[in-house]
Image (cartoon, rainbow, N blue to C red; front, side, top):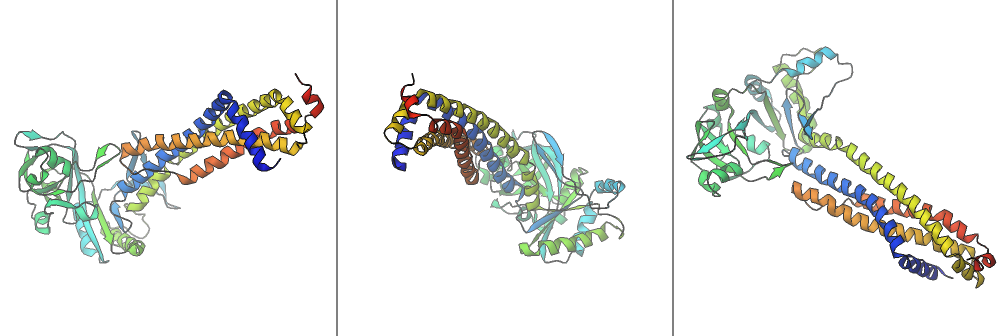
Length: 424
């Protein structure tokens, strides 16, 4: 018998035992589905993290008084960097907030070719009202300057942005997010321009409305108000630390720009040569990378779940193939009696086990990708297919079928044709 005949016999045997084959395929498919589904969901989450945290682009960085907190599942994961040899008592100095005067002094002293900006979080639970309409008390209010929108990846859709005069004179003007304008003006956000709204009962004139940026992990990125930081300090004085943002013309200049920024800001903070930095230089793309690395344990968990399921499926498949050898003893004897070689018999049983495993992989991959992309629909990202894990899944299932079918195939190949023909 040639390979084509052996493959045809194997496929006919797989099709003839529908219930047995179906159960085994379902077990294998479940393991691959769990693996591919979780990996697909993680890839969608990584895509959203990159979009959410890298709004400034790879050629920007910020100066903060401490590392950002990245939250998953309600817990706070604070990322800390500690230099080699740094003494523990120096860690406490990283809590010294950046003041408006320090941020302003940095902008004056920093000479590297770039765009710089100052911002501060005013409140997380702002309430914006217009006539009888008002938002929920969950609007983010920021104090920024004329470069805030550019440095944070926003674009003006209607009206205009804040200018230097607006910021420095502390005018009562603001730029609002798309959701705020849409809610207050009943689906006509363009009507918000030049309207007088109240932010926590303080009147402000709307200069512009931002383009929508959608939501991220269930939180709208359009639910915000941007005031001039001078006015924000005068009216609210939230006590939050100021953030300095820097954007260079070229990504290749970022390292040089960060080095110069560190030197300038150390002088602003009056640190001597033996003192550690009490501020953090934070690249926008590195935040996304750090957040994605913190999701690595999910990949490990998915791999463990899939591996355990596939081990169980391999044991089940081997038992099923052993039963098949026993049930088809006469068939094996007949094949050998008409000249079939023991290698052909072994190959037939091996191919049966591999075919069942590949079928399980096929259905598992399809289900896993579909289930994983339900998560991408929730996050509003594109359709995701983890092609590298798809290939790994097929290889793993092929190996499972090979190992599970090896012993039954050897057993079938060793059968004596005369005794096999007499078997009842």
